[in-house]
Image (cartoon, rainbow, N blue to C red; front, side):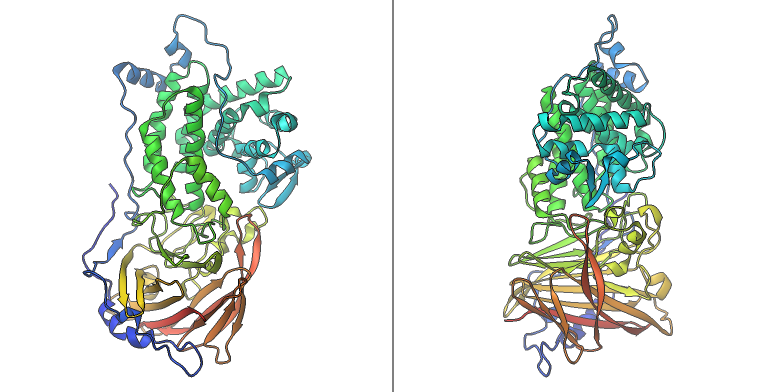
Length: 625
């Protein structure tokens, strides 16, 4: 079984680096003056030294084991027979005709949709990540060539939730019926294509069941009968095909649809038992033991929470108690998501996510019913979070997901983001998962590259290979992490150090990054070190670039000596970035907001050539008085 590997050794070259920290971190704040504060890296540490923790490839993400609910012999036999293909009606009442096809309960979900998208539907348009598409021109066929965001909305029927949020049922029911009829006409029976991917089929079935009153509440009896038959047929198709999903999140969506159908359709007990067993097993393979999904994608984390919220609402409607494992999983999923929330309440831009706004995160967490704090033990989820006086530092200190888990996998190892009192100061570009809306599909791979993140890049190469279809290749195999609290004369600080081997095979160098954030949140010191990965040092030099993507709305200007840059924030505060040697440059960049809109921003770049024997590059980011 995969597992977290802990090593009782400190990172390579750590002692030598600390001897040099006093000089390396003494960075001039202004031309002609030096920082008089003692080096944070040399400051006395609180408590006993901690051993570094090594996260190794793949084994860094541990599969959590979840057992199906304990059943009596009769229910186990029922589940087994249904899995073998015996119809649910035969198992529940073998001596009578199958019950009439109908829905047994009305579901009230706490999960609200996007009202703006719903209003656009009533006006005749789909609105997906800021892109309007006329309903009259939409091709609903399973084989239609749609971008991934439109496939998810059209074939997953997530638009039903948006429509329900836009107006009372009497005002938007006709729109739901018209769209449902168009989709059924284009997809009269199960087949191939995007509509019959397990994830889309499972999400569609769940949305049909949860939002049935909206699309079946009209006077058209023929459409109602046709829709009920489509619900039953989709449930039967999922029974046979749920195991064919290419990844675990898609399989979880399929099992949620099956379980909901078992709760809300007649003669469904056997199907429910079958669905619960499969769902709990799939959840155990989706999530690491700290609650983070193995794709390390915050969007996938949100999708998993939303699926369980909707399914739990189906249990309430059917007056059934969900298995304890489902409640436990919801409680496990929320803290990792909160660990990636910035000081503005929105989401960090990691593994393809845009900066999802605060209201969406708050609404999802509220709908889950989970009251908790952000995750603190981040060994598998991998995102270190440091909070200092309402300022939030997020640091990617784990290997990227394995290719089989990755969805929009990014080569972001050792990148960081920093927000200060509601303003994003240092960001990643983000948004690869939103490509196909306002983000052009052609730049999707570029948004997943190392250069699209605030970290060091060697020779313009990714630290982990970025492949097509959201997958990742060779690169980072292990990450070593060390976190501790420093006691200083001027207060305390949190020091996080991590290293990765993504460039070891190609260039013979390890990248190590040290970040030290004061508890007042007004000073972040950093150092990027390149050290030889083996005993035999390679000759020659290689190009490097250390990129800091600057948040939206910040005015950026270089100092006269090109070793510093001023940052004027919208709230009137002023920050300064300084390096002790070399030169800074300002380049163009972009940042994808929570609505999927690319925003032009700028980035600070330190670049040059470094010997294969290694090098050290220190920097300081500080709020000015």
